[in-house]
Image (tube, rainbow, N blue to C red):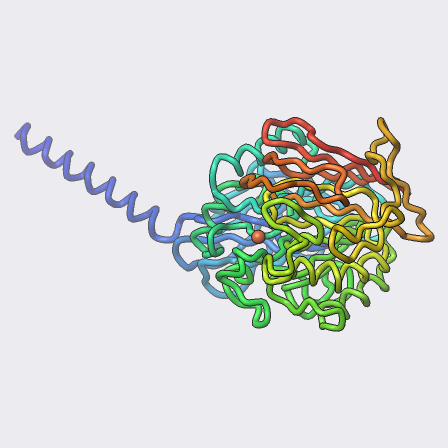
Length: 434
Ligand SMILES: [Fe+2]
């Protein structure tokens, strides 16, 4: 009898374990995200993945214990995409994601988004920028942790990824390891705006906007977040208060000066009235790191083409800062204008300010708002690995072979940039003023 009772107990125990395992693996798991996309002053796109198809619901509200509003999209999916609209600008909302019946992630103090300020409204803005981060290893983790330690409660408002976000060919499994498993907290709080790198291009095609990169990211094609409609996710622009961001595709889109991307870029720059214009793409116009922008054969000539064809448009349009990756180092230029050739053609007159650009040093780089002239170029491709190089391009003030990322703080007429290395030290910094 005793023996019988104990085996019944064992059977019931085993059955309950089996049931709970079945329960968990039958569509009750969030396996990716949630992550935020295409933030505007009144909307955000929330995305996540579940192991089984289910309905898509976002619950949100002004505190995590009272998510009294909801948004959904029709059908049953494993990859969930929900547009939340009708939000107040510059406002924090807490949220959870799940099905019609239950919330599966969020609903706590760690899951929130903050809508962008109204376009044109002045508001202090913090931007986090990582490049070539897709190594999925401790290098990437250290760079992430160093930034989080530095930024603490303030957090970032905008997050840029400069390409090669997932090695080696940008597959979905590689994106899981290099992006979703490395930055889960930040992905749930800060909208990420990517550009396509050559490694991401291994599993994506820009002309058809298809493949893993285009499946994972929801990017504005119709000017939904400000700027000129581009008609493609390969290149796009958006506004955050008085800052205008432009993403270009240097890898897989025509880089001619009369191509569709260049024409759109010109029109977009003509249209913007923002105080600050920041452009980002993958291939650096000036680098002597693991790639050499003086070699027309390096990277299929993409660096030379971007420099010769696209930089004149950017500079005529008053772009203040250009961020790229591809070389796995940090390289930062002086305030420059009009240098479109090889490095041996650099003339003194093209360097508008040969100082360090530091308020505490030679003084901040000054940009007169009516003339717009002067751009700083930053290669920030060391967020996942470092690869050295001669690191001596004459256009650059700083060339540093360290792991790290860039933090930008913009407040009215002042912009402050910092390169934060993997140990949390500020290895370079500069300021711009208007
Ligand atoms: Fe690259």
